[in-house]
Length: 382
Ligand code: PLP
Image (cartoon, rainbow, N blue to C red):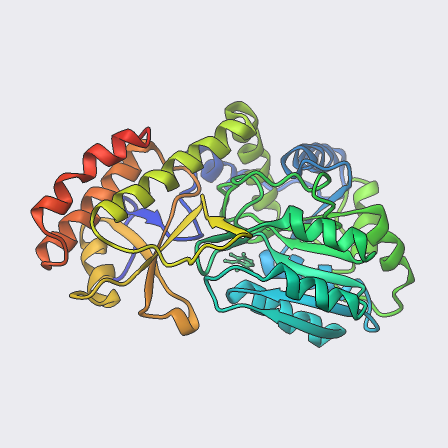
């Protein structure tokens, strides 16, 4: 029985549990996407998103998942651009692929789950680059990269900074303007607690200057076309209307909770999950260095001896908790627990408790290790 039940707790690294009021918004009757009602929704959502991104820059909403915004970011800068692509996980790798597809790219690669070496970034920038790509929160490894440091280097070398904030914006502190990020983007199915299918992208004046000179931009994700339409309160092509209704609702919820309270909530969840898995004797996957931290939206854990991922996933599912595995080269090496979306402290405790049960039953942890668990969670404020 692989099918997800309505009562299952989705603790993937996205999609995430969606609040009932957001789900209900999806079923609203359609409206004219060229009329005043849609204009109001779009204008207000774009304005609120500027607050979420902590930016004065333009924010556009694209109908398409996070990768749509990734491709828009790189594709709109033009084919003659030289990139430095920073990779320490699957999504850094995806940006590397996109930069070499659209331009030319020098990659600074670290083993997945290890820190990016800033000295190597400096060296790469000294050879001249138009833009740098970086993933803020590497969902594939549960590691958060230091954007501020890279932002300062980009300014020094007059390069644009493109930041993937798909699993961070709205859930981990990410002050786009303060860090000097020129293009930042996120996806709907992560920290904002929506279903998948929308992406949001911010563009600085510096980046617009470059985009305006680009001869061949992508068609569907042409940011100039999107900006022109946004100024009229529209999108260039038919928007995924139900998701825009859902966004309106999700942004209301975020406003009511407060951005810093949301960030604190995710941080408490992730800190507790990390404390719990460590108390069970498991190891976190990321090897932190000077320029990285544990992620506060997704926890990646080394698969412990005595159980394989298939069994863990199956037995967690039997107890109503859906967890994620490792991607590509990390398949069967790690498991991941996401803590974004409509989750409560009780949900997190339940997930930890079920994990403990599965590991106990499989002889992976002993009663002693498990016994310290609750205490650790309480200590972490759960
Ligand atoms: N970047 C990061 C950091 C992600 O976590 C993801 C998806 O998990 C993506 C990009 C791609 O987004 P999507 O799957 O919505 O296209």
